[in-house]
Image 1 (cartoon, rainbow, N blue to C red):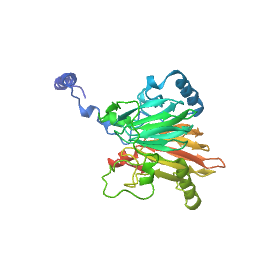
Image 2 (image 1 turned 180 degrees about the horizontal axis):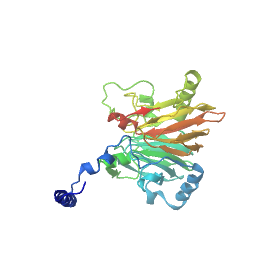
Image 3 (image 1 turned 45 degrees about the horizontal axis):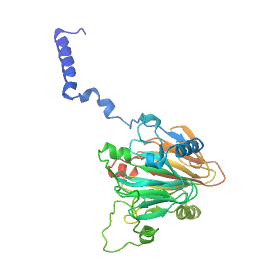
Image 4 (image 1 turned 180 degrees about the vertical axis):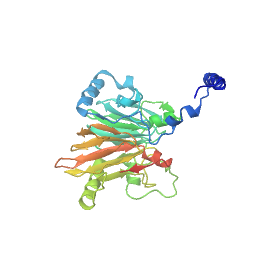
Length: 349
């Protein structure tokens, strides 16, 4: 049907309308509606594996060349290839590998992003959180909640490396990043080593004492205890179809996740097993701890060894496999608490 003069007039008027909108910081929803509301999530982030054999030499070279006085936190960030160089492994999570050499101190500071640490290599370094110092060993899981003073030091004779996980991208998106240096290099130690574990990790809690319940009061969850709990599950329970044996680090005051924005897990994949594939709207960052395995993500297989890191973005189909003779053990942290708090959690086979 041929265009009429009235049609031509309307087209010109529409063109003038669309030209005027940007100058007033306006936009026409109907022109982008299909891209804004999609049948399933559209992601920029992609699955990826960081191999420890490639990462470790660069980390130690950074330690040789860059002092902690210059870096404050000497960390190699794990940047998702799909996010264009953003300091993020997913849109809500940040991950990096931090190294501290004998005799070094990473000065005390605090920030609103929550943080977790999982010790990868070496032992004898310490973290001090809110006046309590804990000495770290491989596999230990350390929490640093929002806005608490924390510093690190290494009084041992070996380098110590850990995986850092933060909710920094989420907090930045919410325009809520605050940061402050402690007046001195280190905060004073006011509580003995292991104080928080003795108070809260044994099924007890001080009565009539107001406590911040939105994060775990425990500073260090030792690997030896977590692995023993996993082994007990593997001896007496049936494995989950999707995750094998999955142990969650919890806040003993609530029974929920250790931090309001991040949950953390230790996972046991039985030998000679292929678990079921599934997908969910929480994103996960995995670290190989013991053994070897494969995570297949959207049809692409990613073999892992100890200390390799693999990111599984939100709503990616993924599956765990352990072809070996020994258990395969993984640590992971996720944005699950945020997704569930916003009633956005979905899961599908």
